[in-house]
Image (cartoon, rainbow, N blue to C red; front, side, top):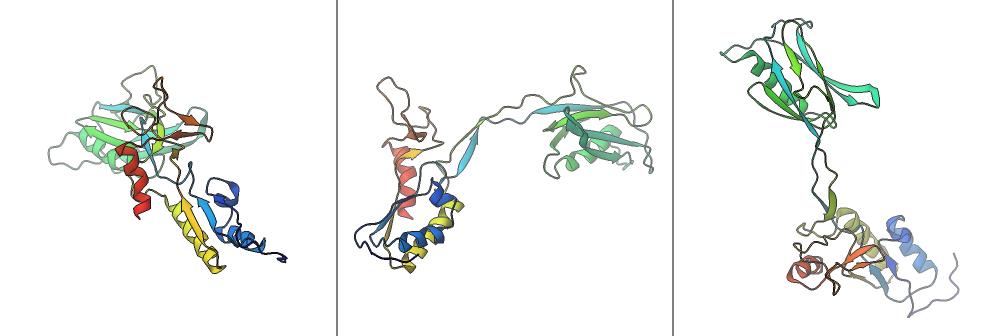
Length: 261
């Protein structure tokens, strides 16, 4: 793009939250500003929505509990085994089965305890399988749907509530701005901004970065202490949408950390 006129005291401002920043390579954005002939200082807004780290609040995994009952038949063959099947009610063809052979390891331990301990570490492997925690002849399982599968002999794996085999108790929590994370800027924002100002410098352009006091995932609770409040006491929300923060010590501690670094 030929430059016919250079505007020495004029430039464009950029914003991390908009498509010309977060969706484009930083070098391309810097190139466009230079190619258009802008030579003034470039002001970059670090953003209000996506520059920070997130922390979960109020989440809870759905869970179920399994009891091992009866007496197991121990064998080295595949016929004597217990299995726990994880899947979805609406997708029965795609499931994960964790199988454990009923092998006697002695040492005076109860047979149900041996099998429970054999299944427990395998529940902790791989995404989407589940997490296990056991005591005595009892195993607690978190995540996914679980179905009992009977082994040979008189040994059963049972769900204590026969009316339902579904995991229960899951809670969709809320993602909030991590007020304690250091550095405050997440990896994507840091890398993009560094590359952007490096590219601007390569064109001989000055640049400045700024932070407002808006947080897209800000904690609006009174306990967090960072929300600006209306006369009626409700938190101030701006149209971004974002929470307008205040000048309390908790809020200042968050905003001043990226300035110091």
